[in-house]
Image (cartoon, rainbow, N blue to C red):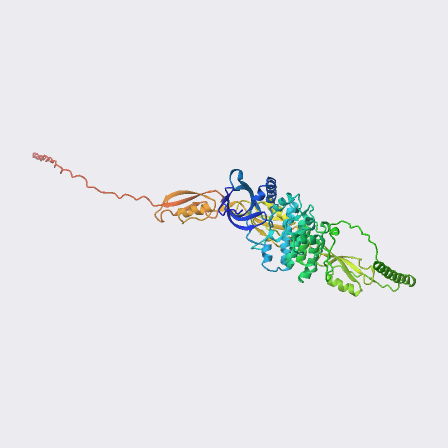
Length: 598
């Protein structure tokens, strides 16, 4: 079945081209139309989807996988089901899982390209895988299908483990084993011995598969190959692997020790947790002593175990009649043993009779604070040799001796070994990726998984939702002391008001909407700028406000034209009628009266 590009799932996810195929599903590039993001959509094969019990297990396991929020695990965003084939009673309802889209390549593609990795890079990739497994195991999820095709490298070099929960759903249909109908299921090169035997597996099976993956990254090929899956599975159960250093001389004995311990046939002999395995891988990266015993490499260390012995069952001896040749061989062996015993007895009697004066004893020198090279030289001076080297977390300088047995000053026969404890330095931790996490709970959980603590939290205005981690210090991948503080910057959920003064109203509205703000327009007449230009805004540019805040912008409009006054002549009036002015009556001049003269 191939889902047509362009088809919608759940009225939300638009399906694109196929980007991957597996034995049980197709993976399409898709787009979440609701959130506008790129996603990967895994769609179950219709023939498997017809089984209702498998559908139920698939949904249950997908939900479990969705709960795994870790930087080294491909995130599961959503699950659902849709009808992809037929109508009515013939319709097939197919489950799908919506996942994080990872831009990169799988380790299978990387190995197929012929590119060889440096041992340090192979160890770094494995540390990322083990970080993901440690987180999943502590949340009750066993991957059960760790292989190169299920591990991706992003373009920035980050490790992403895929298909959590899906492999477990497949196993549940087969009573939690990796066998069905006498055929080995899964990828044979990466099966653990208990998977190959059809036993119920636990988290330690993932550690075996992760070690097979590490082996292939180091050497370019898996430890066991064969003509058929059955022959490969038989080797996982019955044969010991060739140490990686015999395939690639660039691999150190410490890395050999880590790989071979994780490849132990019995789960009890392996690392018991992914965190323990990862800690040794990180010690190997740093050049510190590892906890796994460094093997003594011989010319050919590959050996075959009987299937019964490999399964952990004590084999009963088989009695057969002895031939004459067998009796002669037995007689010869008995004779040699008797001669050797006689020689040893004579030596012991001689030492008892003549005393032990011939045995030279020396005082053990003080090795405290010395490096391995310095301790070896010091012991050579006393004809002693360096014995077992046990690393231990300490605040003393890394690589120096912090304890010894026998203690300094004690007497010891020459050529005997002095065992030492070496400081591995303070416990180291790798800073996880925090940028992109969306809550402080997720940050604290990721730091707790890495044995680190949350330090200073700074809030910054951003277009991202509240609590989104924008930056971290130190950056992801940094090696620091365990328990150190990691500071982060998170989105406050507020945004900065953009500057829109001087732009057009349409541009201002667009800028405000893109910033998550609403616009309110107030018009003001102004003939100094073009109509539609923003004259002012409130709040001012750069102000931090909540998303959805109303921003008022003042927009210029053309002023209304003013009417010019019109002057009309007044109507003519008749000429005024002259009013006659009365002529004043002249006042008569009095005649003077003559004064009589007497």
